[in-house]
Image (cartoon, rainbow, N blue to C red; front, top):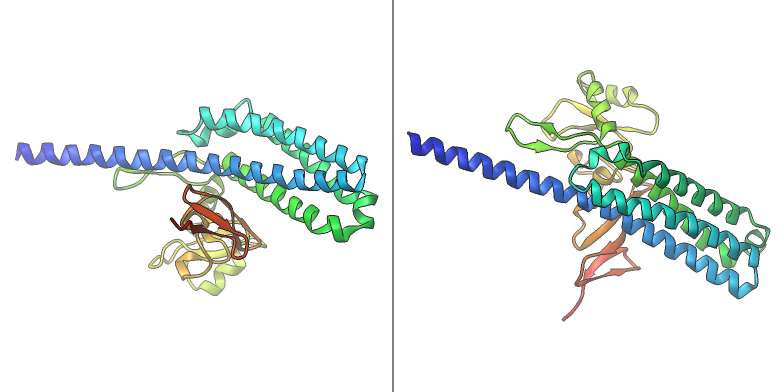
Length: 270
């Protein structure tokens, strides 16, 4: 009896350690994902800068340099946050670096908007157009990813004794879940405009309100209804985002390359 109890205790400790290790790794994965998105945004701005230089548009080039300077400041702050809060992501919003990151990112966005409004860019939109719009979309993805981190809630104990993480916005939605029960058609009307009522699980009568146009784990639809896609489960990916209900891959794991045709990681041939 004593040996059985000791064995059970060891198994529980091992399970808790394993789950905490997995959750900690998940936090670091999320933080690194934003870092990768910043890197992609920087490359998008560089392409516009290169085109501006070719066209002799010094004013557009200066705006690109301005945007890159602000983005560089945001990246610097984010790297500090990633080091300090990689195992306690829910405290990132209280970091002294948060305001620096957010202010710098906002200023970067202002510079990108100035580029969009520039007369040179408007006059030859065929050359600038797609690149500037693409840059703007990546910027919006970066903003959304940062907001997800700022809104992240602390770990919450589950009945099994293990721990799980959740987003603060989802935590707020848990207040709704208690009332979001019954016929599905009724739930759609109870969710805020732009959000979808998704079953919490396949066998649950409870629902949660999600923005499936931006939600990483329910991108394009409710996964519990076999709709949409979980962007975090894309094999070979590192940095991902959800834009307009479609998963977007920003960076890939070693041994993969990013196919521009399908925007998915493809295993390299040996």
